[in-house]
Amino acid sequence: MLAALVLLALGTLTPVASAALQPGYGKLTVEPADPNRQYRAMPSLQWVTWQDAAGTTRHRLIRSFLVSEDGGKEVHSRLEYRDDAGRWQAALDAVTGQQLQGMSTTQFITAANGVATGGKYTLFESLGRVDAGKRRVVRWDSVDGGASWTVGSAGIDMAGATIVAGKTGRMFQGVLTLPNGDLVVPFYAEHQGELSAAYLLTMPKGGSSWTRAATPFLSPTYSYSESTVTRRADGRLLMITRLDEQVGVYYYSRLLGRITNGPVNSAADLATAGWGAAFAVKVPGAPDANSVRGAAPSVHTMQDGILMLVFGRIANNVAFSYDSGATWTGLHRFYDNRPSGCSGGLGNHPCDTLGSSGYIGVAVTGPRTATFYGDNCQSGWGCKADYTYTHGRTSSLWTQSLELA
Image (cartoon, rainbow, N blue to C red):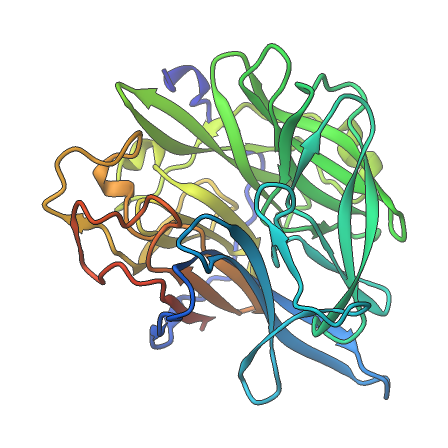
């Protein structure tokens, strides 16, 4: 089924330094399970930059994850910040003083969808209804590095796209800032007459509303969802999306990419940009290397134009490209909690996608450094009692750092 889409269209490649930087990893550490919660899963991570009252530029990590405290009947997203002592603290609603959280069925707060905007830091809700016409999503603003937040809203104008009314759409895996200050974010939703579409939305610098600028992935046959975008060293945008295929009773996720034909420096450039044909992302050493299986992709441009691709399910992985995405190398598996003795999977999920969710929080902390967070068990179905798991079935979180040297 995938053969028709596997058309290599990478455009001009950008060379990297002759003595290419190589990844090195810190010690993987596991945060103990929280006995007050049935699970913690699907983490997201962000490196926040802000100015304090004295005008000093400061940085810290914020994170979010899904959490259940009543046996899984009620699920919400929790947002936290890491204080100066390195401890995780609950982020607060600046007006009510209450813990900031969102219900997963109506509002999914994720640390990934954040961007510095002037003197504050802004998060955009990740999950929302996508009714016909214009719509609005929740936004949260913080002036203290994520410790407290005030709620607002942002519009989304999907003009030119026919969305199935009443369905949900989701921003995913981060906001990209273009050279002129315009913002870009991936967004996916069910499309009328098609299973789904992966879009790119833009917002002008200092603006308050998102506008559909491009629809790189749209098909009546395939189901596209989680997407990520980065600006390569040559100025072209690389977008990678998840493609779901059903084989028998099971669903398999694969990664496809597309690249703009020319540099994108502004929202106006993106609105008129042409795109090369879709191509399969190939990662040697990963399952199905000719069209890598994976979910929740996250791609970033690091020093010397090196691309870093993080993806999960199967397990939790990172790989690098030294030729602008033409090839990938250096596959590293952070964490693997797939079950043993698995024969029939669970529901529509094959055995090798069980265990951790594969949703990895990625915080790029510098041109050569990053921090990652992942989970031990997928919320709800990933670690059922049917099988034995390498790291058990607890709701622990793990973290590991990276440095290119």
